[in-house]
Length: 241
Ligand code: URA
Image 1 (cartoon, rainbow, N blue to C red):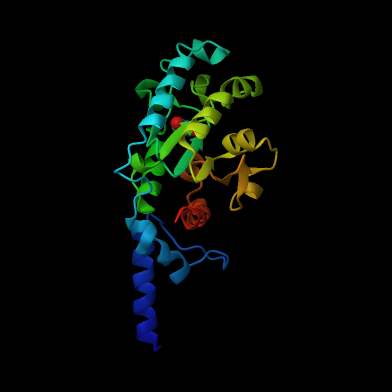
Image 2 (tube, rainbow, N blue to C red):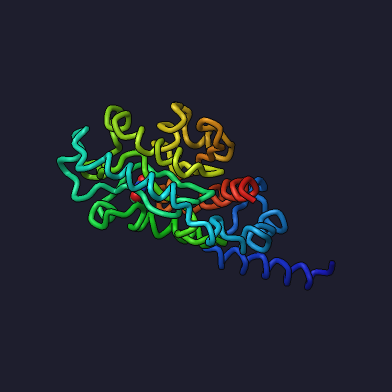
């Protein structure tokens, strides 16, 4: 390849990454650039929906409705005092891919929907860049009520609420779970390993592979680490293919 061809190829690669929302290329050599990374959006994962549109999974939908009824007007922990709404979770009951965050923030509390604020916009854009739609996946949180001032949920709040997201996992039975951030990963996996060490490797919840990755709110503050989450998601796509 001559110099001009190399420049053309480099320009194409950079345009590709800019379209994915990356503002710059990492300098370290440990991030796959070129074919390894490009293969995913261009291949099956880009076009194949995660959920089969022809299969509405009516039993799972019914079980989710029953679970929501069981939660009722929950006052099992103190978080009910400050909440406007219980944020149950939403998405495709046939989803192969399930995202689990920490707990609702202000926007989620108002709208009663998970990940609809600024972190949610980044998550939605990540899902889209993976070639999926929000409606293809299922999104829930470890706790279903907003902790006051967006503080981290406390241990007793997590242990009171986590059985519900575990029941959601049992009902949906996804092929892969992505834990967004430290609270989610440590709670679901009963681990105290820092997220920076957990991310990028698969763990298991029962028999389901779990990929811990950075929380979108962290990525908004540290955009240079978007690459790492992008890498983690390539591994997830490989699993659900
Ligand atoms: N952060 C979370 O962990 N969950 C949400 O639903 C929104 C923001």
